[in-house]
Length: 125
Image (cartoon, helix red, strand yellow):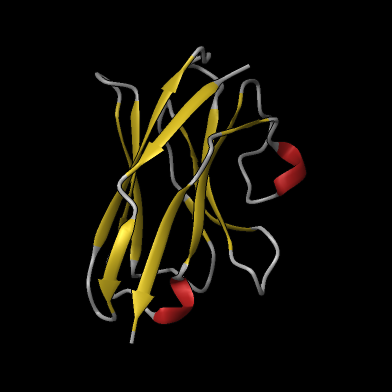
């Protein structure tokens, strides 16, 4: 299974920015799909952004489009989530997830068997 370690969470005021990092290991470069999910006490786990590590376009949740950007540094096998114009409703535990050999790279929780431990993001108004 893919191993994932997240970092970069923290507390920020509304309108601020944070960048989350996810170091990926034990993956198959040609087929691994990597995604960010989040979960808050009031909501279930929801997808935020996903893409294939090899390249191609990304998929975003409607609630974060034009504010969040998923990107990669293949040299260090790190996936980033740049979060701008943060809102209080973005507060959640953010998880990195991955799946080798994914036929589709979508924001569906059951599609992913590998998960990181999460990093907390708190946005105050």
